Length: 320
Ligand SMILES: [Zn+2]
Ligand SMILES: [Zn+2]
Image (tube, rainbow, N blue to C red; front, top):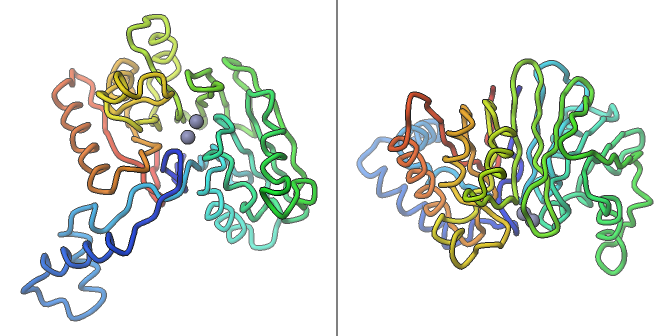
């Protein structure tokens, strides 16, 4: 199974500013001082091997959109949420299909704007013959998609899209088999409710859990979530806030922290944790610092089980 991150930023898409770029370029030039980098290839190799991650990459960018590619079937697409990352994901689908209509299964955590805003820019939705199934647990699932394309918000109404679009209601806790992939939704604590999804196929499992606040003092709740995460190969986790924020000023804002992510994943014996839904106010250095701190925390609290921690960024691919 392969997981491709198309959008990893929380709440609002962000991009690098000119000032960020200039600063990076200056720091890279200083780091390269005295080296013989007279070709692009040499410079690229140097950047890859010697420059810090936050100089050569950027976290976030697009809002939530994560593709799950099962090893067993390449016929259909599976994706979580339609944040602004849905635009490049759609371009990827169209390029890969080479003119053949696709079948796309979309799993919606909830319909807050940052999770649906990419759909009107999702290219395959405009292609006749494409089949799109939008899965979710909310009653207002279909209404939310239709409404964002109504005037005066968008020029193309939902009803003129060329694809055949079907909405499929799922029941929390009930596993459904979707074209060979077992998918289980789980209720999460968030304004207006959100749902995590556990995907299981070919002996591997991925949990996509974003926009979810965890109150670890509620034991039964913790047990429910640990059961949902149990021995997953990868958990994609809402780590928008620091623990201090999550338990003080931003308590009840419906998001979680890197610290809680480590704790839950350790309890559940998860193999890999991907920090996700990055706070828009955090620049790349801040996200990288949070990642280092989280990795250090995991080391300090580790028993016999090792949890690998990464921070998701647009373009990251994880093979399981
Ligand atoms: Zn969100
Ligand atoms: Zn939300």
